[in-house]
Length: 231
Image (cartoon, rainbow, N blue to C red; front, side):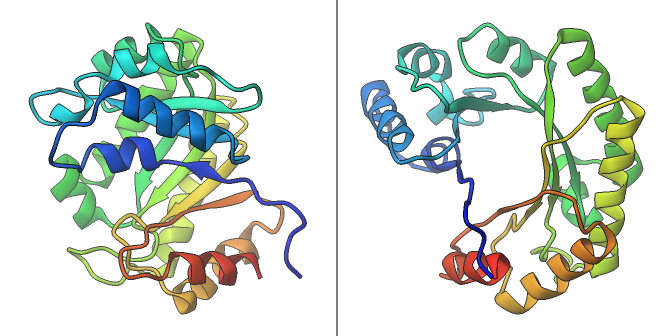
């Protein structure tokens, strides 16, 4: 049976704007964010606090954050990759929420961040300590590349299950209670068959764990994947 209620978290403003080639004005960015807030979504990822040298589309992150007229019941968040980014985020009026992020594919992690799995694990411990010290709540866990990787190809389901267990262990070590754990289709490899395999294995291990999905429509399968997962 389909669930009676679905929570949608929107990442388009951040992830979408930052890959556009041309400049997008602050007013246009804010207009889209405010329109999305009226659709019933519970969270909107608005900006990235990253170096404008590498992501010039996010150079106006503080301006965008300051201009948003917040709607009650919606969390307005951002992304940061280092301590300097977190400090920038905390100086804005956005909702600052932490997360535990681990790649199921070690090859993807090495290519994307320069860190193998052990270094990533230690980095996540450091982030959890930083969030604790700064009073930032850690709300979610993310297993990236849970459905495949453009370097490794198919990711074994057992590796995904191990990463979920690792996230839960990290949360417990820091007395953090996560709202949910997200399985992320980071590179758009997921299919309905993969949804069945991965979600089935995770749900079999943790029947009561609140699960979420981060989906991309790279191959036009995002809606099909979502419907299959909900069923």
